[in-house]
Length: 136
Image (tube, rainbow, N blue to C red; front, side, top):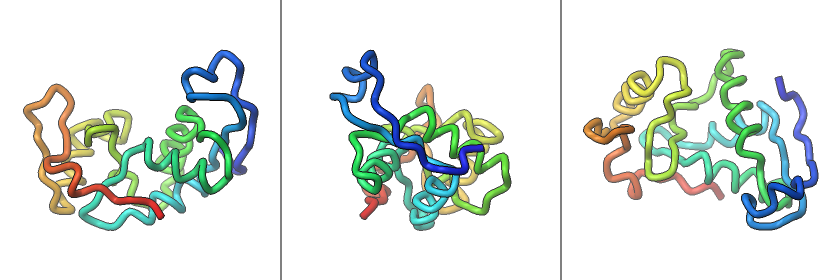
């Protein structure tokens, strides 16, 4: 489990992916839980917005997408008390890697009053833009 945040140089082969060079953070479970816990009931945030907030906190170019999601999943496995289901992909898509897959993610979001368009190939939060939480 990632117990400490780690600042590393963006690998040369990944600079195009990250939109430039510099440093990135591999966030710890604690960092991820801290920020995800700020998302209020009835709202969602994208994993990309979470990564952006974490990068700003550490004053680096980016937060590693793989390490960020890994920390989210590790926190879930460790039974951390946080509202991971309030995270979605770009466009409001549910995250199939969460426990119980897409169906359980939809159920948890619906429990908080969010409507889901399940007719899409990957279900999405309806009226997604009005449900977005903005990290400060």
